[in-house]
Length: 288
Image 1: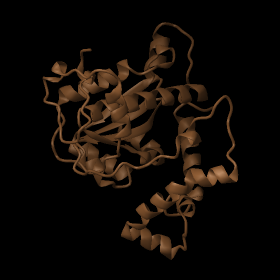
Image 2: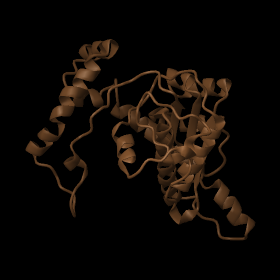
Image 3: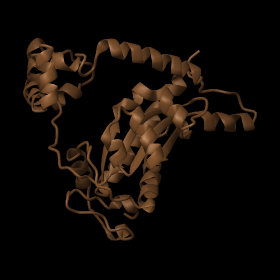
Image 4: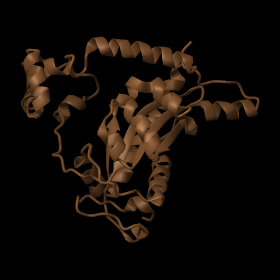
């Protein structure tokens, strides 16, 4: 098995030496499982640059290995490496330091502009400037993004998805000069890790995997599903001094209360941003 992605580095103290990855061979599927089970979001990065050849190969492999609806490839990645451009993105992403620290920021876009331009050039009927088009391209973009994540992690780098993309779609789109029916979907910061955070747990598998039909959990099953999460999640946030201070000031006494409080995912703010997104998608040609 040749090619760069045959190099799977799961140990945190190993880095691929550029130019030698075709000499590595890893049998079986265990490395893929190891990658998935050791994933952690990295928010602190070393200043080490990422070799351009590595970036190119990871992106190429990610696209080659991604399912694409109709093989229309409705995805575009915008790479930001210039410090000045990253400074602008830093402001749009709520001034999170990792945007400045990471040597590479990638914005993944749902992009039908390229396809629709091709359709026009061949006198074909226009399409994809609709809600289905937006959803299809968004799903395709996330598939590519996750492949990119695995590719970089296989090479010993770390990544973090930027949820703040959704709250600044218009501003990011304007900065990147995205055309009609091309919008940001998610953003990823990439670099060599300068931290070693603990792996965060997930809910039990049975909460995710249902046989044949959706299973509505009983109150007892729901309690069991969230039992560990409520203990570990609460301890994590209470260990952050400024978050602990805010929660105590607002009388928050549980993880569930925290998640929908003004501190975390405020329902009122989500309603406002949802309307902004709707208007933006309408302006970009995805909604009537």
